[in-house]
Image 1: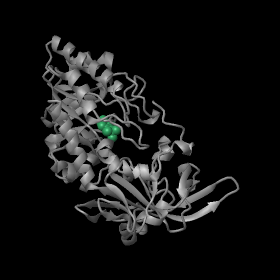
Image 2: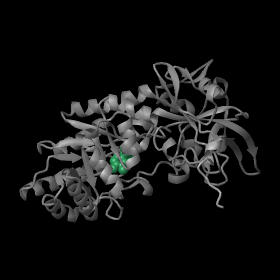
Image 3: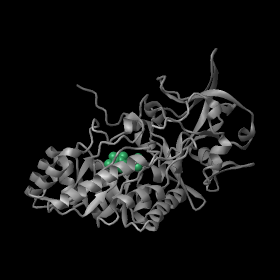
Image 4: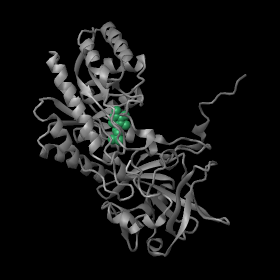
Length: 442
Ligand SMILES: *Cc1c(COP(=O)(O)O)cnc(C)c1O
């Protein structure tokens, strides 16, 4: 990638004020402290404690609408399938569903959650490299809009299952275009060595075979090259290869009516330059304009990532000989992205007085018994006192969904702010439920 500046050099970090200025749904009020859409985050922390995830519903809605508008302005008719795995809260799914979005799901659980949130089966696309027989049967019996098939083996399995159920599965072949999206190793999916999709060289023959298989209705191609993509060139390359494949398949007399462009559009965690939906729309248009295919996309992070914060409280400040540690009550079991992807997240104080206090370097860590439980190193922050609150920014995607109860820590509460009011969208897990499904052997 366009590697971001070295994560340990605080002089290149945007300040809390700069981070807040770039996120208009957040504002520091000189009395009430950090506000989300006018609601003091301190009030939410006072009422339901920390750690707590808080999302701006208005921001999610506005981002969905601006994405849809960018596609419309490029004269593209695109069905947006929200990638459920980014944030699978039912409130969030219902929000996008009511905006007209479909869902991109990667498990039977996500499929059922999307249906429970009111998303019609016809607007559900099922992706993933390891769909089980049981999950495929569920997808067939729900009659979902499209199954993105990732291997010849899966195609055979699906054909048998669909035939046995007397159904025809609308499928797209997920093609691995062999492009490097320049993102973190763990979230690149479109290189030949990645486990995802059907190799470009095999795709045409498999598509031709799919057209002859019982229970299979091939409708098109899909691709998804990775996540947190901050450049448009990889999209341009991938879409050009998919467009060429559409043409080649049609030359063989095969019907190709749909192309699913995947997700992956990145967001500016560090206020770095990031591509816009208009830029992505231009790539889609230049590849697919004139091909007369129905287009779809599967954004996750771009729609929800910036719209959420993780609210945490300072447990204590620990001065070691080498470093000052700000120890929070939130840890890697809540937000794993720093530990897993070396991700940088903005951290801003919640209180109005902390917001204007002088800043000194500190490492911000959680209470979990792992050295990887570190949110930031040498970060310039005010000298926060115990019980002071901070908001960890851009935690709306791959945050709560990736939480665990490691160290027997119950799952945090989730709240959202809508129309200047806040509400709980998931209660904090009760500690007793950590062991209620356990059994002691005789
Ligand atoms: C994860 C995933 C997405 C969403 O990726 P984002 O980076 O969140 O936009 C879309 N499609 C598929 C197949 C995925 O696995």
